[in-house]
Length: 32
Image (cartoon, rainbow, N blue to C red; front, side, top):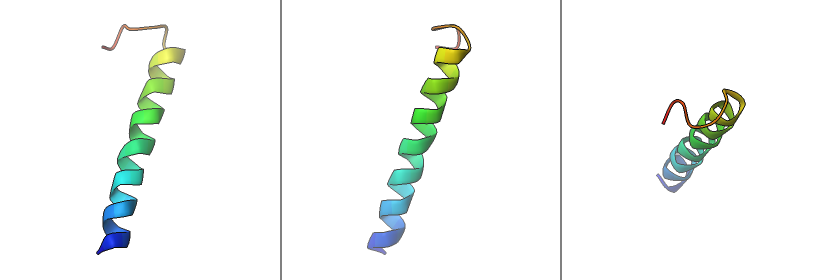
């Protein structure tokens, strides 16, 4: 169960990082 929770959190973190990178490359704060 601990492993599953950890991977879930890590996955959410990775998604947030990817979204930030996409936002930066897309030209600033257009999406937010």
